[in-house]
Image 1: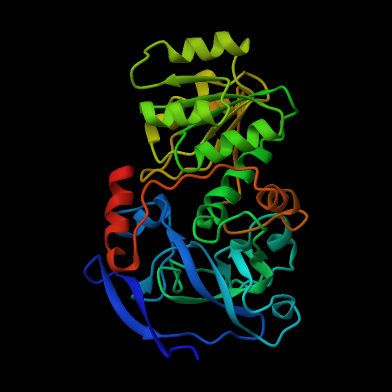
Image 2 (image 1 turned 120 degrees about the vertical axis):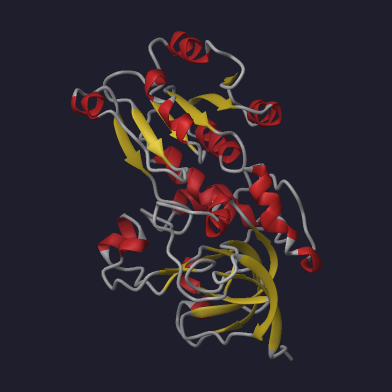
Length: 345
């Protein structure tokens, strides 16, 4: 028998702090699954709850349970057809966008933030997320974990993994082209692996030695320390024969964005915007007007796109990816997670 109450680590706007609260266990609606959370993780988007932000992070419910990437075990389900495809006991991963239709052109092909219903919410920001013992998730955004993928460690794949996949895929590069992965940490090390799986040549760029070592371990063809190597931009241009075909920026550093245009091959090179700095970006309009490079955005990890995310799901299902978490924290120390994430940048 399921408990009626549970513990939840919640953010409160009134004092800008986390609190461990006792709240009711939710009941799944027709299209939903009730999941016992086995593993939940935080990324930089969660840190944005605590800091001034000009980029429009949407808040709603207050207090709200933090966390928007998790895996768990199905313990209940709604009466709908999609929910009925899952069985109690299934280990599942899922994405955090809810209250959207999942069927309009915007949901299918762009991002469900722009659902025609105008009702989309993101768990962990405008609705309760996953740093709680149980959560309801939309069955349309869930998948059963394959054998060999550990439910207790796979949570990062269901935000960071999906984000990194779309960021690389949406560059639309042919095998053999050059891509720079700027920021080789949580998302970047996954992006490197996706890029190599797509046949791309990869340059890893970061400011820390451990991240650059991780980039090499994930298959990067070359790495550069942009903080210590004053000539790194010239070296990238020389190595690639004129510049990379795409620079994918996973960082929250405005300076790292400012550093990208000189390493992009003039013409149809792409600056892919993934990381969200606190300050708005400043781009040279003349560069863009004269075709020096293009600027694109990519779906963040809240939506399968295209064929239902078939290729991304397949890579997860085939367990091709190494995914690393910086720290593992038990429930009694949940409150430490946000401060550790802040310190990690």
